[in-house]
Amino acid sequence: MTFDELIDTARTPEKIRQFFDCYNAARTDVVIASKEALPIRLFAPLMPNVLLIECVDSEQMVCKIAGENIIGRMGFNPKGINLLDVLPTNARDISRSVQEILFGYPCGLYFVYENSYASGRRSVTETILLPLSKQLGTQANLLLSYNIHHAPTGVSDSDGHMKLFSGWETGAFVDMGSGAPTHEDAVALRESVFSTLETTST
Image (cartoon, rainbow, N blue to C red):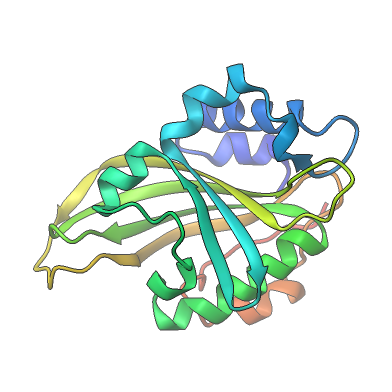
């Protein structure tokens, strides 16, 4: 999926465009943006809905920053938590595979899904996930996630725990200038919570 195709697909194209404008401002002629180059003026309005994740290794995806809106929806601050520990079991291996793809191409990932929260409230979230380095010229090991929260879709019985990816709508890899996975590259994702993942080559 190209950026233009993403804008045509997104539920909130202007917010997605704003996020990409901020990211692109930190790229400075390289494919992957750096954290140190993110423009504060553009980044500040996005912060309430941002997650910054450090991929320490295949077993640790540690939340470094969580915006206030995300904390409010989750009911706790996930900073310092290994996010693999809060994912459904069947999504953990897929998350590792996605991590390898995002850093390997590099490319982005756009997806729309439903979460169930501890209160029992269900709602749809639209997320764009992009690779990030700490500094220009260093290996990328961060993922910058922008999460757009939509109106509640209903209420269900709750056991007091949050369930991520309780529902799935759509998703696609996003070409950042280095291509994006083909259908064959994404076969491993098909039997997961990403069962409807669509990919297009560029």
